[in-house]
Length: 268
Ligand code: AVW
Image 1 (cartoon, rainbow, N blue to C red):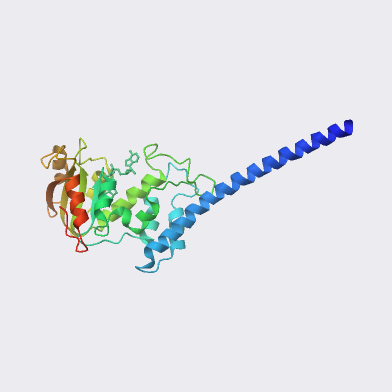
Image 2: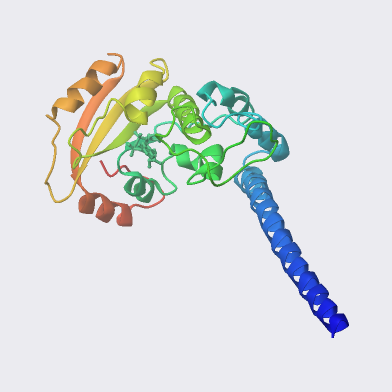
């Protein structure tokens, strides 16, 4: 009887240990998989994006990327931490086809198609769009969850990346550029947005000829080109950059886009 009891207790203990071990292995493997997935996807997407243009050392680009935040407190990653990354993978400008946006990301990308270049269609922008990442003090890992949110602290790895990349994207914009602003916002030109606080301040007057503001409204409801906030935008622009403003409804723009061919005649 005692022997049987000992056997049952031992059996149960072994079964519990096996379950704990399996759960532990699954958790560890899944975690590593997430991190490797992030790295592998980064390198894969980088290679796909650069294959046609020029060969790029995407493993080197990954190293420059991770050195910005790995091992650091995720609230102490300033935009300058990405300087080495931006110097190995700078945004390539497209003359007269640079498109900025504020408030209407989806619409901007529907209209951009293959005709315009947005920050999210540059190599780094497309690889990191909609992604979250951060490091941790004393760790050499990349985490894709549990990272600080956009407003949780200013110097978080994601926000600092977009700030630094936006500054660079704006600095190389050349010729006639355009910005799509959300006409249904109270302040279509927001001085605290990335466009208002970073991009406008980084335009290079010797490179940029004009900026066309396309105020996008829903069926003519919303702001127009006389909007107070746009006066602040004009004030921010160097006088040598010509300012143009036009009002368009969403449906006008989408209808035009459908008809647009490879000649990419602007819809504004
Ligand atoms: P936006 P931006 N919390 O539509 O001018 C979370 O205002 O700033 O346009 N995420 C945020 C927050 C926030 N408070 N603020 C901004 N974001 C993120 C790069 C979020 O992902 C391009 F070149 C939101 O979708 C454009 O010309 C995105 O920032 C320009 O910057 C845009 O906020 C658009 O930035």
